[in-house]
Image 1 (cartoon, each protein chain N blue to C red):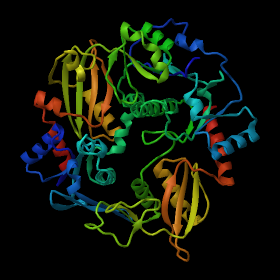
Image 2: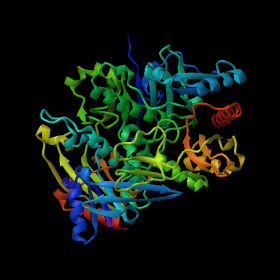
Image 3: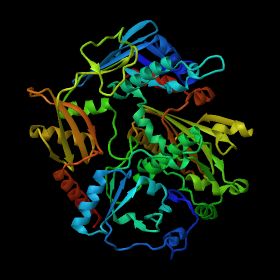
Image 4: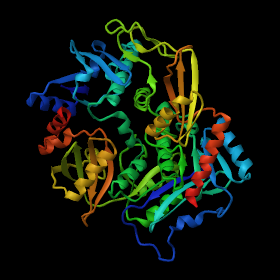
Length: 301
Length: 308
């Protein structure tokens, strides 16, 4: 049984000259059942258990027909028969051939990317060292492949992560502060004896070591979530909409959930965290996301 | 005052510490192997990052450091945490060392001072084909490459090029090898995991070190496919300073800036036609190997950059 096939080719440099009547390498002519000029316009990439990806797929299908979008999981991607990115003579072509022989011409789709970190499920019975190596190689492959997608990508990757900005908490705090959102105090101390911080508490979900730990201001009681979708902000409090939009711009995030909290009775909202791949999206934000994908399609036409 | 973090007996750090001492720069060394005797607190409060490092029996304010040179390893890889027959791993000590190293790294990544190099920026090297795209955007040529797990595609690629080499995509376990007739017999193994194949680029190697606004180019003459491991195959390397064309130097500076790597080692092959083909950008170069062979004062440039 043929295994998964993934290939990308970059032809920067000198190769043997090709016949002038064959602008594309011979390997491209091996592709079968190429879908040209079809209704397929949106590729949704996700980890397989993704309510947002499913909701976007359903909404796109309801608005544009069942063939408008295709949903591909991480596992299906890693089992794809053939990925191909080859460039020659200033032309390039990107094809994705799935296990069921369906071929997707990536040159003509918008990609909505919600892939988490790579997995190495095919190596579950290998040694830990081989599994770790396979994980690194798969992550590197996905990063390379996602970066080479020719059409517009919502939640594009960079070397921080596969889908959208994946900053550490300090970086998010700095960006939130620049955007004008209040932030909580945070301390990392290797010695509670030498460097005590009695006004702070262990961070939520963090197990304090015997003498060291991450400490934050106590959690506030009242939570809130705002969503920035393509520059539009949804959710309460609405007086923070400009700051949230600015944070999304600073983070270069087309989709961003910003979590806030405050103590009941207080005016001040403080930043708790941000997520470029939110696990849920309220109704209005979902429609805004689909509208964003449809706008991106305009860039292809 | 500058901070140098890692294992100070490692030659790149050793040379940097010596260069700082020669210039009379105040230099604080955070020795990763002494985490049991070091302490750290990092405080964030409304946009201000402050803290204190306790090292070598003294306290230093983090905000007083003008620059940081880091070559820290993961704490779990340090020799004192490897189990032996007579002594199991001290997991409590490992947990503390890991926390301290990670906390310092988080401060280094967010610190407003000069840093060689922030860990987030170094991640661009985690995928070689991805990094190659970034190198192309800086206007530099890269080798013809195919990443595949399809043996037929590899055979077609081999038919198109005289010689082909292969290596890993991520850089882990990456020693460059030539695809010869003996290795072709095992080609089907790539079905398990994609591998990177490149058309062999003839010519001699040049390593360029960028340190801020300074540049050092070194020519390496070796018969080995990968001169870094040439000794394993009995190949010697000869090194000498190299005069880099201004156009290539400008692109190297632009590349270092675009990757946010003020210190980096850029590997080239110079072909018989004089083309510069770039293979990779090393975000944590072991520059000492080249400095000791050629006398180029890369360590001096490092401490000058950190001092500002």
